[in-house]
Length: 443
Ligand code: TRP
Image (tube, rainbow, N blue to C red):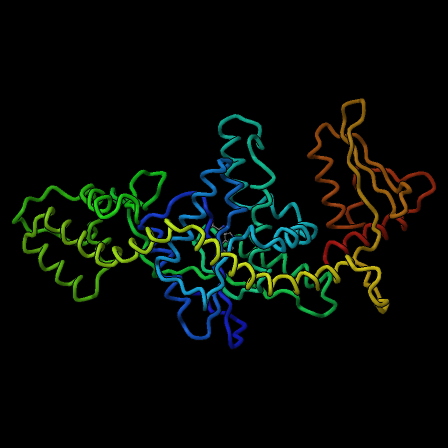
């Protein structure tokens, strides 16, 4: 687990659950159960929410979206989430989140979003399939990390428990928080820089065939679906070796044993291994596994069924959670609106703070293609007047490489560069313009 560098008395822990499907036993063991346990620790203030805006990115079936958020809320409540301690809400009930998303979008560099794994993965898949790189990619997918940053920064979470695949998103949230603090904070830190908590020791429950349990592998064990019978039937399908009853079995590396371990006490684990080595039949072992899991799950299942029969109770609980969350989100957002300049005109005259100029006007390189089919670039001064122009290049890349080199090396790269100065422009002027660009780049 990552150590937090800032350790105030109360650590805020926040995590979101994307609501696109039903939870299986692996989600319970890997996410729900440990999160609820962690929320009971002293000194921890937990925020759990249903990331239903994120769900819209992946799913355009309204029935499924709605059903999934209801079921997932019911699972968390049935599993013992204490909503008097934990702030539990739907992302879409907090209008401050999309509003903050926009403020953050305006200070997020596009280049960084180009590097987000989810987007890059989709592009790579398109390219591999010979499609347009952006085929089927929505702006939702592209901006996914910014919405996620808003989820986290809105509540100034210190720690974000996530899977390994989400770590990059937390790093992006830190970056954008830092940029926003720097641009608008005037010395004040609006946002805490969050840290990812990747739980190394949380059991990753294997699926029926031993691979990671996942809907897409069709190897999952349902959590509540199908009741006790559904659980039993799934367990019957766990793949084992073909050792006969009475034959000694090696428990290590057996999917069945790994799943058993996730629900057993150390003494039970030991006993199960002893029996398997002594020749316990796989059928018997499956029966024991079923009984062990069902002992933990059955009370949750009946609470779940009761909750699903009263969606209005879940609604009321989530509305309360939203009110608690908004009591934190709204004042912070009001402050942020002030900071960026979205202010009420009739409010008492704001003392004209010395406005830190965010962007000094800089010279600009422009690249273009002429009717001769060749690629060119030019450098204009901040006021738009031309400073230099390049010779023609066969490829846009070559032009781009010269631009990059001039930006990086400044006037030193001018000697030998295939460029000529604009009429009436002195070498010194160009050198100074390049120096200004270098300085801005280094900032
Ligand atoms: N992207 C996360 C996932 O797919 C879900 C999520 C959305 C989230 N917003 C979040 C997780 C904020 C942690 C914090 O698992």
